[in-house]
Length: 350
Image (tube, rainbow, N blue to C red; front, top):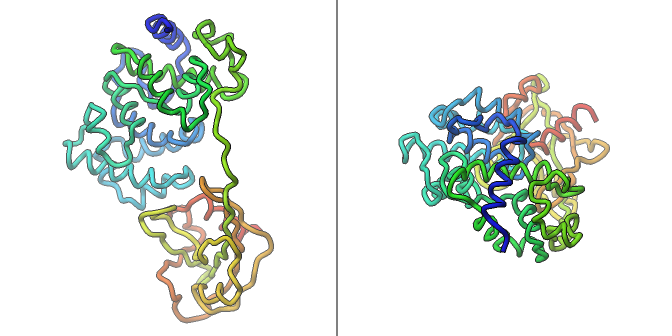
């Protein structure tokens, strides 16, 4: 059994000297702002610190409090979020702000159980907020912390099956005092020292205690179960230009993939290319369509996508889908996914 108190003390001593300065992180001696902690944790899910920084700054400037965010229009939130990906996070962010106002008087609850009842807050995020914002005895476990635990204890069972084992190790290490600093120290250790490749073991406060390093496994852990190939889907997107060069966009349903975002109309995304006659029936108007050279390619979490882009001009009449004509000079005012930004770039620049 490792000396838990010694591990806790050496980690916190390292953190006090090497902690990262992040815009959402309270300085030593300052009280953490639960709103900022929550906002950063939602943004950081499946996204890097570097990518999140400008979005976090923009969000905080526009909506400096949970009250301000709750009062915002969802379309505005999605527009500012545009490009950060995993858009369900933005919808849940807005819903959570409304729930905090309606159910908790504008104050985040300070315990994990109550936090997990809020939209978009799962086990990890609830533990992170409880520990970092409120100093509660909680053990958040993200990918960085899983890697640190797998190496510290030389856990060779592959992920995701090893998640419970690694969470138990993290929970056993969590101190009652300085719980937030301990959690952030583990995150920093994984992000800056115990990195996926070429870990900087000589700079690690736990180098002598690390079972993986002792066994020569530090670059091999955590092991991961082999993933199957992602399926490839295909479709046709329709770039329809109308009066004054405006382009027809439609809004996706609020739920599901890319929910609530604006898009160029397209066929369904299927394993095979749609037949030309079928694609024409799906098109927003029966105009003369011209296939542009090349493809738009995009990778989602669970599948890859290839889109052909057909261009047409509306000479009269109304589209047979519900949509909105948007001038390209105002395209920054609507929420577009990275996929649709690629489509726009392909249509306008080739």
